[in-house]
Length: 315
Image 1 (spheres, rainbow, N blue to C red):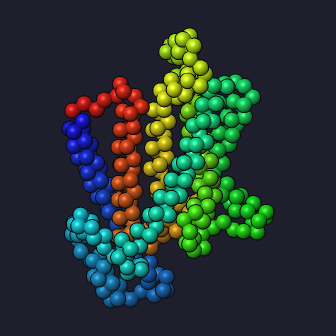
Image 2: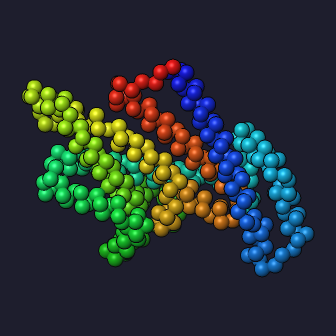
Image 3: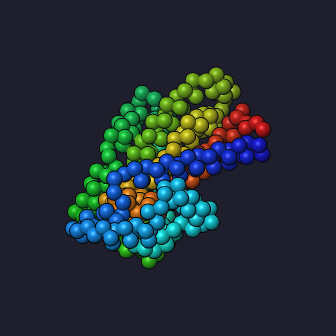
């Protein structure tokens, strides 16, 4: 197992190196930089001032030197300074991470709590009225865009309560913030729970046809034991995979939801930074998302071992 950890760690480092090179080069292939955008918004161009700003930001240096300086600083925990706000990048990024983590966690909890049980029920009650209703609900969740559902929720709240459930300032209490985030979490989680429900249903149907399920029933095991202890555990591998994919997606894929509900999260900040060509913010946020994705995938792989003893990572 130790050798597996070493190999996996080296692979993660190699992946991060590749991502760092890719995002660094792609940002500089996009026409224009922060100085171009500043002068375009001002309506005039002063070439002397423009070159001075580029020199202060280090944009006049060769691209290899810029990359080495960034990676060297990143290795020492120095994320540089944001071009737009002129504040340390770490101070701009850190306050937004907890907000996105809370929203992503609530969304994932909502998705699993609804998706897995309903998927099991749909499989156990196959071809019944309840099964058809749940399948229609799941298809609706996959078909309806999250931002459209979020807008409907906002309109409903305004109409029935006169209150707009969006971020105006950080709530002064933890539970108030959780309550405020639960609304966009439900809007995003509806799609994720529909996906998990359909995958759980199809996986359960395959497992329930296996010989060991019939053997368990023949031995007199109750439906609850058969469905949840024998069936669900063996059907969870593909479900865990999709939960991991959704968890990784939620860290950087909540751009529209954070915009609709005015949430000061990572994804929304990333889009703003790309628009302004704020290289330090974009590069560090992308690396942060990449690290989260790699860690989630690693945890999912370890979960396979816990769910299925037949899976072993040999040295």
